[in-house]
Every structure is written in structure tokens, then in C-alpha cells.
Image 1 (tube, rainbow, N blue to C red):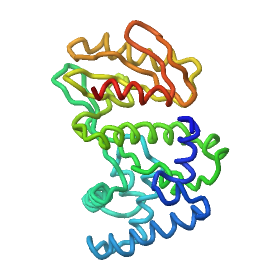
Image 2 (cartoon, rainbow, N blue to C red):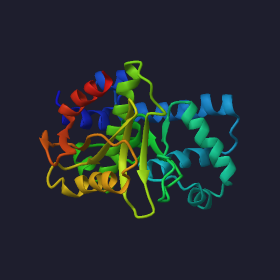
Image 3 (cartoon, one colour):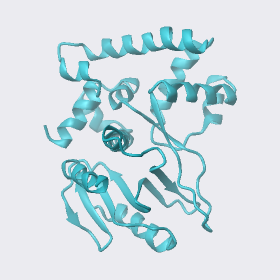
Length: 260
């Protein structure tokens, strides 16, 4: 299975072993049961959440905002739930393995950096389920296609290091500054920073490459090493002295080198 095929399979069948392997399982029913069991058994019994319908709606709202900087005030207005309660819900979803929180990069530099984190779904299949996506064409045509692919790449990167008993959490972040320079993922390894820009298409990687070059030129004090433009159907090529393009198949070979 190619990297691209694995991406779509994960979107539609999830990365959980049973539904991914057993195609006799009706995936929508499986996810419905999974969410209901999680909410009714785990959340209600362990965390004593009273507003279960609002909690379910909150999960769906997070799916629509996956990959974006978290704004709990906006969710608070939409749900009629106070921000402090939403903060506790985020902690519950994080502790129970539903979402992953990617924190922004912080350093003693002159430019102001975003301080709010981003939220991703640990299972990209659950993300697509919450977005109502049931086919490959719907993935491709979804206005959230880019966010879905970003979610997949970031979570697979984190799982890669996690499964190899590598240090993580503190080793992953994103960067966004006041000038709207944004880097989707930064891997911190061996006191070096490896910026990753993620895009669905391998065509015209110049814009993504520009962001990495701006990071290097604008933040000279940061120990930035080689950067990568990761795309769904891209090929390995050197774009500039400091940046290379790669597709999913070769991306994990790159992670192998970073893991040495």
C-alpha cells in the first residue's frame, strides 16, 4: 500500500486495527457505537459530565476546526457553555486519547508568536466521521481536505516517534507569528529544528518553500536545519539549499534518519 493509499484508507476506515483490517465492518455504525460508548460509559461514569449533548456537539465542532488555532471563546458562544468548562472538556478528550494538542513554538525572540495551541484528532478516521465524510471523493472535495491531510501527517509523525520509544511531546510544535508566517510542524531533534510544511498537492511547492526560507532568514538565532515540503503525491527533490520536497512514501525514510 502506497502512502497515498494508506492516507485515504485511514480517512475512511480509521487507524484502529479492527475496522482498518476487517472490511466487513460497517464503518459508520462502528464509529457511531464507538462515540456513543465513549460518551455514555467513559465520559459519563469517569468524568461526570452533565451536558452530554453539548459535549457531543463540542467534538463535532473541534473536528470542523482541526488544524486551526484553538479559540474556545468562539465555541463557548456557539454552545452556550462557559470557557472554563470547555477547557476541562479539552483535557478530558486529550487524556482519553481522542485529540492531540500541538503547542506553538516559544523562544526569546523579538517577534510576537501565537500562544494558543492547535488541536488534532489522534485518529484521522474519527475526524472524517465527525465531518460526515464517507468516500474518497468526499475527502478530496471537502473544503477541509487540507486540514484532514495535515491532521494525518502530524499524527502519523507523532505516532512514528512514539512507537519507537523516542522522546516526543516537547519535540513537536508549530510556529505562527504576527506577520502571519506559519510553519505547520517543527520537529525538534538533537537541538536542531526541522520545519515541515504540509500541502495536499506536490505541484508548485514554491509558496511552502518560501515560508521555510522566511523562517530561516527572519529567525537567524534559531537552530533551523533542513526543511521539507511534504505533499500527498509529491516526489523527492531539492528545492533550495535548505529545503527539499517529499511525498508520504519517502517522508518516513526522512523520519528514520532523524530518529538515528
